[in-house]
Image (cartoon, rainbow, N blue to C red; front, side, top):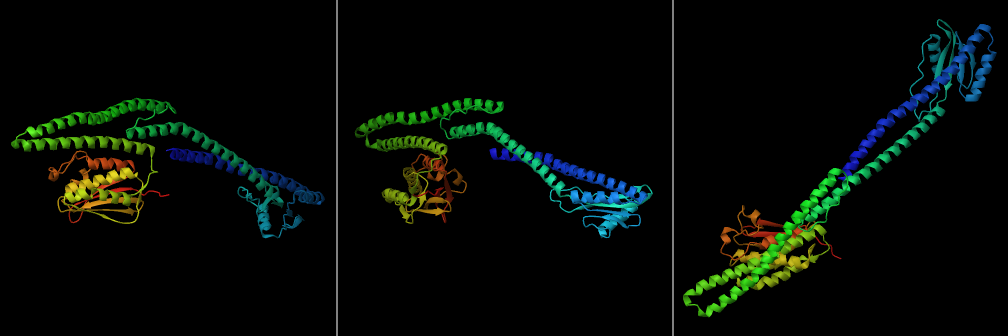
Length: 463
């Protein structure tokens, strides 16, 4: 946002400076050009007056002396001709026979105005010719042509332009500094508010956003702080409720199991089925409580990772997955499932070893339980662009196309797997842990049948 605001303000400042400086440069050049033309026109008028007196008195001495003195002082050539175009005086190498001079003389003898040329620029260097008729009205007795040097005037224009441009540059810099200060005044409270929102979204207690900037932002920060306090209190109460419930229910469940186990020797043979069902439900309740506590811890850990942006941890995914495959091998054999890990090169993954082991264990447990007897579960690790991938695939019944998007939903289980024991929280726990490390869990159908689960995380940086 800060960059965009500065860009807009800078563009406005450039347009404002350009709208002010460009006309000023043009006016400066035109003014200096007019000064030069006015000064040289006055000289032409003086020479024309002397030429008219010389024509009446038939004495050109004063005219010749004045013209030569002028050329010596200013280095500008002058040509004076009579009505028959005969040169009266010529200085500075300028001749009446020159084509450019001859054209001006013809125009002056016809009493036609001769434009002085366009506006001078700092890079103008070519001399200009100015002409004036001698006499007035229909009594034209000659013409005066003056070759004007524009170098001094162009240098003056360059100096004035430099001053204007320096002033415009200083004004632009002042606008940028002022815009930067104003932007910081507006954006800095927004950055603090953004950090507080990120902390709150991660489920962690946010720091109060300090009020600052315009009144609207101060009011917004005050409102956010009140909302953050309310949301944080509610989230903390919810988290404490889940954790406390999980812990507090363990003791009654343990006591209940002891009492039921103590009843077993006194039960009739016909009550064995009921006893087995009760103990199975107790085990299911215990697993559910364990999973709820694990999910609460996973969500808390994911929130910490999202706020702190912790990415320093790294592990070899292939090594961790291979170790987990060996641990789950006996479970797979007991379920008549063939579990295989495809060995390969090291795959550095931006994730803590313990958390990746927990995720891999969830994937192996899920695949072994739901693939079915006689199925094959295959796991492998590889890199894919800037990502590291842990893939677990089975050739069991899999999920329908409509069920795949719900695979990581809490407590959700496919209708075809209702008879399999489970809480429906395992994949949700894995997703929360992976999301905390800026990764994702993908569920796709395997060919010809089965389920493919991919854990995609950024590649780690090995040292």
